[in-house]
Image (tube, rainbow, N blue to C red):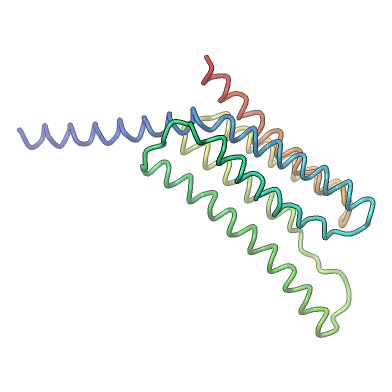
Length: 205
């Protein structure tokens, strides 16, 4: 009986710790979501403007600059934030977005490698890989999984809506058009800024 009681207490303590961690992460996620949403949307607009003016898709390298700027801003933003306990929820969220970054960077590198190989061996014609669509789908999936892990439906719902609108936008826009990069404005607004504002409002209340 005593062993059962201890086991029940242990399970309850673990469940409470995970739940507290989930709530802590949710409370501290509002501002970062807004920050990344604004950065994604602004970077997409800047790339679109420069791409349209110069005709060069090389401006997409600005995404790497955005990542560095976002990381610096996050460091200052979270300096005085409540420390998040190292639990299964926090590790899961970290791994979700870690693999998103790895796959996104990997796809980008593979596209450039394929382009270089084709040029070296004399294969002509455009390289038909819709990298934007791949990134959009992965980002939507990661956002939906993050919302499920946090048990915060607005994040999951917003991610699904953002992904659907983005895919529709990409299907409408002509292939190779600089306008296609503006799909990240949709993602930034619906998948990041809106749920971030909702989370921040709940935290302030």
